[in-house]
Each structure stands twice: as C-alpha cells, then as structure tokens.
Length: 114
Length: 116
Image (cartoon, each protein chain N blue to C red):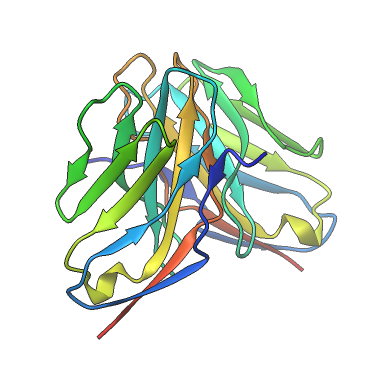
C-alpha cells in the first residue's frame, strides 16, 4: 500500500539559509499535518491543511510557512534557519470524515542546521 | 497541564515477558482518541494501536493491547511476549474532538529496552 512520502529524507543547511520540505500524502487523503520533533523530544504539531486550506496552527514560528497544493501535496518552507530548527520533521495524512483509526506518518525529514 | 503524561522515561523487560507502558490523559472532550506509536532508533513513527473514547472494548492488535480505563483517564499499552525488536521509544498520543482536523498531542515517551 502507498504510504506518505517525504523529501528530502536528510537535509543539511547553514544558519540563515532557507529550506523546503515536501510531503506527498497517501492517495485520496485530503488532510496533511506537519510535526516537528527536536532531539530527545516528543513530536510537536506545527500546522495542518484540509482541502488545501489551513485548518489548524500550532507552535509554528513566523519564519515558517506552509501550503497544500491542488494535488494535495504539501510544502513546509523554512527561512532564516536557526540552530534550534534542527529536528526531525514529520508529515502525516488522513482522510477527513472517516472513522479515524490512525494518522499515517511519513518517514520524516531530518534537518540539520549548522 | 500536560494533556498526555507518560511517567516512565525508561523501562526494561526480559525477552518473552510482558510489559506495561503507562499513559494518562487529560481532556474535557467526550469524543477523543488515544494512540500508541513506536519510534525505533531509525526515526520513523509506527502506528501500533488506537482506542476511541466510545469504544467499549479494549483495543488489541496482535501482541499489543490497550488497557483503557476511562474513569481513571488511563490508556496503558501492554506488550506481550516481548521481542528484541520491540526496543524503541513508545509515544502515547491523543486526538481531541472530531471532524476533519485532529492534530495529535504526544506524551514525552517511554524508552523500552528488551534484554535477551
């Protein structure tokens, strides 16, 4: 079965640079979530999209922005990167309106800011 | 206040024995869902088991079962017949409300080590 795809899997950037993370949800899933997991931390919700509209926002810095495109893939854009942005970034997808059993997580993008 | 509390930062278990990982939650919603995820050292987040707040029976998935005690607001994960491959970080998470958006709130996790 198709899973959530995230690219790139690993990314190394320098401080003050920009980064773009991509997420391709499971086919027919209409909702995408982004989570940030710092080293030794639990995942923290950043932002979500339903049918290409932002549906909820968590502790996402103003330097970050995201969107969901017409094909339902999503991109997380991160600017003016800081050392503290080094983390594992997960994308998850789901289908709204279904008896929810699980939120399908992608493999994550490991971002290292040097 | 913490919405999800996992009081065991680390747990050790002998191979083939059962282990219980604790999780308590705090919500005022009537409709919510509780999840357990496994995160091995490679980093991926693997779904294990789900319990809905209206489910009357405890969820089971193979060697995993969820001991759901609604009045006590606890949702403990029981792993039977532990295997070396079960060594990983385990996160309890909660989804509140319903509809089209259900972000997850995670606990701090429990690092399980299975000893041979």
